[in-house]
Image (cartoon, rainbow, N blue to C red; front, side):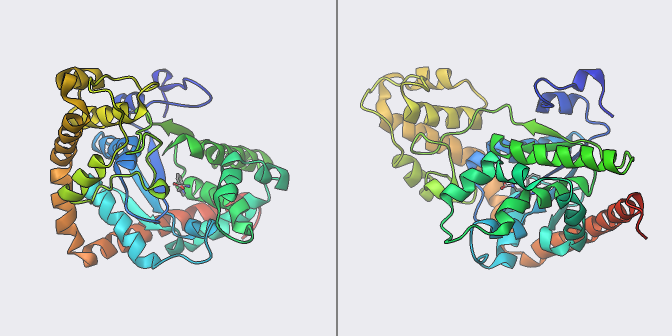
Length: 348
Ligand code: TRP
């Protein structure tokens, strides 16, 4: 399992580089809500890392969190198609379905069964003070807050613990949820005098948050995202519309020039260069030259990903079969864990 060199930096965190260097004994579970196409923020924030870690030999499980989409809306929009679309983005980005287990919440009933004893391990007060949940309630368009809004972090604990994941690659907003999972793992082990659950650790991306075309955090809901699957023309248009400033001389200064710097960062990520070096190359070319440069960098980087995506998009049967096989594997593991949980609790 963990060696001394993979120990935490802060509060259980571990870096991607550390895991890449010591990949043995790790099992990674992470996932996404199927609520729309993935974008470059997802890609550089976590998708690319998942693919790299898989290539380094780490076991990868991805949950398509279809039940979780019901936390802040009354109904999921075409949930079956949305799940397949998420698989499409995963595969386009390079997830190898032969080695990864990709499954939906709704196809693994044991997750719901695990949730029940897990709910008994946390207090209402703990569930109510989760800052990510509070933030989601503040941004929800629903008339009333559902019970699922408060309890989904416990369902998420089932996602993570059913396969005894050791590492969970997440964004910072997910850290409170991971804390719930860690608490549940510890308390279950303690209460039932067992060592059934490893206490998983968050794996934060070392890439800085990628700004969107308005200089703010790239996010579907803000309309500032460049989708992985966008056409080259659409990409050019999105970048042309990006917020910059009036100074013709291009410099990398994230504090004072968030718009310009976000674009530089994007080009730098695509070309594996330093953003300041890109800025120096553009020099006095102004925003127009910068945008042209970034558009070319993004389109060139995404060309193979988009080609693969276009091909896979024609094969819905393949996308479905990835989920069917993933569900089979996930169900086998989840049923086994549920049996262990029942035994630990003294049930038959
Ligand atoms: N909550 C995550 C999100 O909104 C999705 C998710 C569901 C998840 N289950 C998970 C992430 C388990 C990590 C581990 O993006």
